[in-house]
Amino acid sequence: MKQKGDRPKTALVLLSGGIDSATTLAIACRDFRQVDALSFRYGQRHFHELKAARKIAAAGKIRCHQILDIPLEKIGGSALTADIPVPKDRRRESGGSRIPVTYVPARNLIFLSLALAWAETRNIFDIFIGVNHMDYSGYPDCRPAFIETFERTANLATRAGMKSGRFRVHAPLMDLSKADIIHQGAALGVDFRKTHSCYDPTAAGLACGRCDSCRIRRKGFQESGITDPTEYAGEQPAH
Image 1: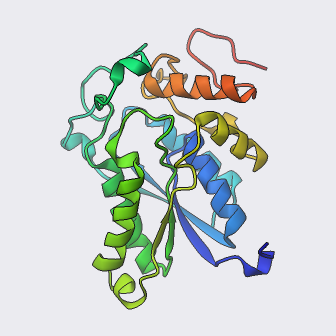
Image 2 (image 1 turned 120 degrees about the vertical axis):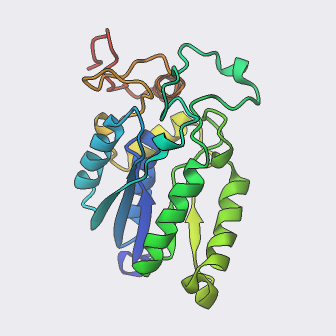
């Protein structure tokens, strides 16, 4: 087992403000001596996630938390960035191999590319992302093949990568269920009250409880046996 002084120096974590990214941040903080975090304001309707990201970063004593603006709403094509209804009460099995309308075109590719650029300027070679292909909504940019391919590209497309070939993209939650992620986050001290998952929250930031993301979150807490601290619209918060 590595001693504290043997931990690698710095990691960069993509921090959305949800359960997965908060748990991924906690993992990076455990395994690295210092951590930077990167979030994105990309025209998402669920902008409350950025408030969550700020709270999580502040609680985690992150060295630097950067929020970048990317106007993906000008591209559209997603219920998260355009005037398209967010699906509600969708049966998971009914989706099959179809990619839901909440998919944001090339989002993780764009996010990782910008994270790579920032990491290169800061001499950081370890990038963490909380993607998962077990309990997810069918997005193609959450699959292991994408992460593996991007890591190879990172070492081909950058000056630092050409010189060292050291860039690594970590996806520590890739093979975990949402319940397993919640268990791991709880063990690492993640305060799930600070996280936000809903795709279509109320103006006050209450979760709708009916979109795919809310349903996956609720199911994860139910299966984990850990109390869900989320305030859902029209419901009393659990205590």
